Length: 371
Image: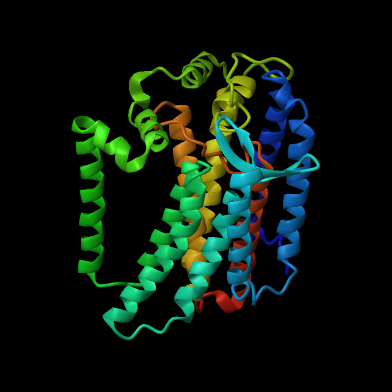
């Protein structure tokens, strides 16, 4: 499978630029804190492994990848349970399993596995009646809720949102009657409305219903605009004070606690100026438009679902993280793909992207006369 096709360069070149920008920022990360002392080496290793996986997927026969999704789903559920008992805690969240210095985040792995498993279930079900549709939706909702509940206990709100986005994309592909979608829409906003009524007028009752931990987590999100976040203040000052080319290597403009992860955009602009921010946005736009265009040309519904499910969470991460760095959205653990520090997140993105490119480059999955 030839990967360096001319049109693939619209994906590969922006991806390489993001990789370089990420590594440049990791060089400066040790100036933030001693805990980031070795992130450059680690991130370099993750990127090397990621690109090897990415290239290997272009050579492998992956026809049966959906077939084994259930098996991997069960294993990952076990890992999500395990992390609640022996996982490492960081910033109040117990999300990582560590072994000899290597950390694994099962909630990130579940994004890929859940996507494959839900698509396999939907593809194998023959829908004839409304009852069949209802039972199918109930089944995939339950399968999504199981990891969501386990991740909620960690807690990892960002991962739960990813799972719900994947579920929504799969449901939209079922082409249900309009009144089904309207009913779900009404139910969803009724629940949201009830939550806010209790939040503003009956907080004691709300705390009894959802628990203290979840209440204060939601309280923090709702009141994010109050400007009390030290991280956000530092990020905004960094962006506002940056020159076109930034401070360069071995010097940082301001201290941002989560700079290499959640606030990588602000950190990058501080390090390498407004120019790096512009380059990051352009790279994401190229990748997004390329994947949207190529996915729209796929004829296989199963593969098309996979493409749009990944695109949805990929673009969501971009919009949310950038909005968070600019103070437009609440602070949450949503990393920027291929830019933020993190091994599991980086590898899962390479797996997603490698699989999708493998499908895109296979002519048997394309519509007739697709360019």
